[in-house]
Length: 351
Image (cartoon, rainbow, N blue to C red; front, side, top):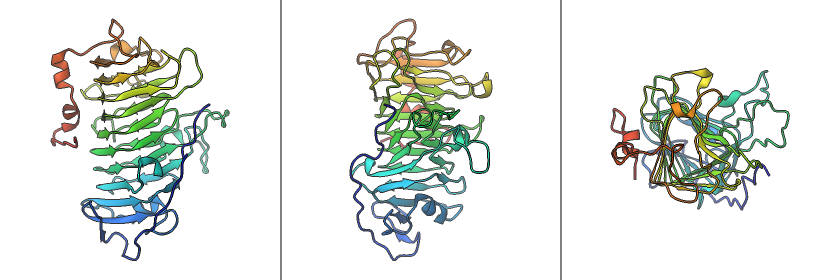
């Protein structure tokens, strides 16, 4: 039950153009130098990490890593000294290019100890001005096949960089799929997700980052419970930051039983009292899987102390009432994608 195959469907690998020095060719329909990754050896390198490693440290402008259809197993780390990278899937759809790993929080490390939640990430992005288009990020850790694992958090993508864009991407996992974080508590790092698909069950969109999920599908998996099949968000927004997660013009879907999935619970890392979750879900379609009282406590931390709100949602999971705080029209006019993302530099990735 835990998961359908992440890699269903054919993965035809096309021929590539080779022979030019690494990083010196100009990318078609994208400015700047580029490398081609191809699992079959027809590109410049065969792994995504090898392409990242080939980018010069301190890269000053857009550098595209074109990834041909295929399955690319193993962790990928984009360090802070490699900004302006673009991961661009070359398939007909995002399912044809899959970057995947399979470790969890409790998975043993070769050098002792365990990976921890951050260390479990299939892809970690620390370089600013990162963009990914038309590909899939997955963590294939199978909870049912690893019953002795003490920590089942298994991250597909961890972001801790500013001005990150995901366009037409998929994020596949179970618990803790998409970790939207920041360099430190005092730093605001922004992420924009446009027309993406995110799936999971427990806290599968979480962290202290500022993020807009725009025209996305957010899919809750069925954990087999008749009462509680998980939580969509677990924001840990710092109290000084007015903008946490904004989910807008999106669809919240699910295979779980009606009324068994919560929209969110407030995460307080290390019991930090200043982590006051901020999450707005507006102008969205909510499926029947959403609990009629959709916000819930996280241990001893009450959801009522968090900054949760809805606005103009629709669908069988939508409702109003004492347990469903709603924005006023005046508040809604201020809590827009542009407001969340602008920051002091006026960043505007919206389109």
